[in-house]
Amino acid sequence: MQGQPADPAARPGRTGRPGGDPVGVRGDRQPGGRGVTPDLRTPAPAGEPDLRIPTPAGELVLRTVRVSTDLGLLTEWMNDPETDRWWALAGPPETTAAHLAAQLDGDGRSRPVLALLDGEPTGYFELYRADLDPLAAHYPARPHDLGVHLLLAPAARGRGLGTLLLDAIAARLLRDEPRCTRVLAEPDVRNTPSVRAFTAAGFTRAADLDLPDKRAALMIRPRPEP
Image 1 (cartoon, one colour):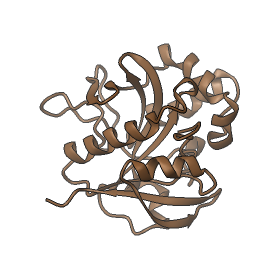
Image 2 (cartoon, one colour):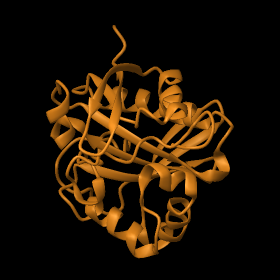
Image 3 (cartoon, helix red, strand yellow):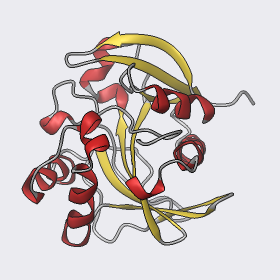
Image 4 (cartoon, helix red, strand yellow):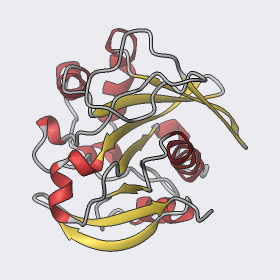
């Protein structure tokens, strides 16, 4: 995430995966068309349904990134200076394509997702199985921990949308994946607006982690008590 109240979340993981990606999820087809819910370790099937989430700002639609139609937009976002500060993926389309391919063509444990709010591209998410990521070596992981990274579109900054999107998605992940007891993130500790946005979305700063390329704030949102 980036910008003002919703700055870029720290560059994905950077704990040993291609392009710094974490690993983590498959969009599992479930009753009701859950779509991109993280779960298993195999790539998602073609034609996977979109995930639709109502929010106070409009309908949020999450769908797996389509390189054929989304690459130009995502490359533009990655070349925004503030985005590049945290994601370090500025460059030609091939740079972004390689970053996406590491997930789309990988083992399926990480999912690159485009977020559209009332039809407008608003952000880029990576949903992943944090317990299966190298990140798990740096904190007391639990089975089926889910992680999230968010890049907020430059045009969407300064409107509080980062917090809104994080809140909606974390709530939906916890609802749809009963084995998951918490959703987490690890933004750079220097990325104060990002840490604030996660906090406003119900995440607690549980610890600071010394990762290979950064000092990260471990942000955790637990499943609500019954």
